[in-house]
Length: 303
Image 1 (spheres, rainbow, N blue to C red):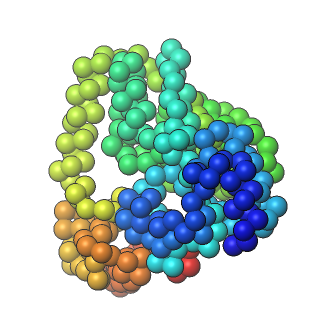
Image 2: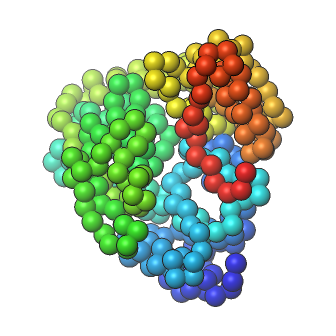
């Protein structure tokens, strides 16, 4: 990558928020991935817009990263610019029954803020290990709740570099999809609309869901959450288990014995281990049940 682009980013962000050859294993919950050519951390909407404009002018590929909870990065890394919208772009503020949050805010942080303000409706998201930006793009959901139930509006940066605000009825949110995903918009911030509730009931519901999550999911191992999407009329984890693949291992990657819907990094797994294992699982489930599992995890880099 040319030196000029690095200098341009440093002029916008300063030297300490522009990293070169940054290992992506440090920035994904899978703890897997080679280096990104450039890894940059903007803190304002203005900086984000400038950074994207530079990438386009220089014709350099870029990827918007939250906390990397649904991502598998190639062992070769990423030949481009990773733009991280995370803690440095994660402000959460409250206005009456609404929570205004930037794209890098963690769902667990928003859920905690809702609980402290006695606002109910966001309990389902308290244990989802992701940022608001990624959750809105994918319409993340758990335990009967989805982002589409609580999102009032989302402010995005369009591919034409315009900043627009979309209302909930314009978001086209479906199972793991939205207009934001289809149109290549970048989430900047969102407004979440909740109801007044009883703080103790909210707290106990969040504790109950956390207990269910830790009893069923392999939270002690690095993973990217559910590895495959839920096929129509089935559960991916059950299909994998019924195919005799519980504990199936390729290198350091393993189908979790606790929940077969999760592929875990059981120890020094490479991206190649994970993709080989996923292909094996897809092939065997297709042979046994005639169902083709579709990855939910996102891939970044060369595979």
